[in-house]
Length: 153
Image (cartoon, rainbow, N blue to C red; front, side):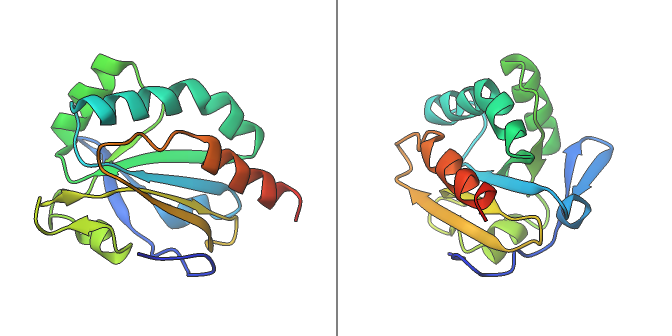
């Protein structure tokens, strides 16, 4: 798993069925990457709902959040609409898990993302990362603490 001071690998992933998001387009902003195992699972649903409620706090730190899993762009679209999410879910679908593997958080046994968080600074450097047990919602406290540390730099 990538750690503090590692350069965040750039990527382009589908955010909607016809639109991709490229990480490097967000240079100059803080970025939160929330890798999660699967749309529709109870813990993932709770985790993404929490981040949806926390968006205003992330914005105060000039931070964008992206959820990433190996589910398809169509699954993400349905999941996002059903949960009324206001941040993009990115599909690391094909080649399956390519970006997830670059960040060192692909679960080969399950064929899905591990539950992992990364806070990337405005220069594209990872400033904080956390690997959560799959069955536990990692919450937002660690993310907010990492963003607070960036603010004080």
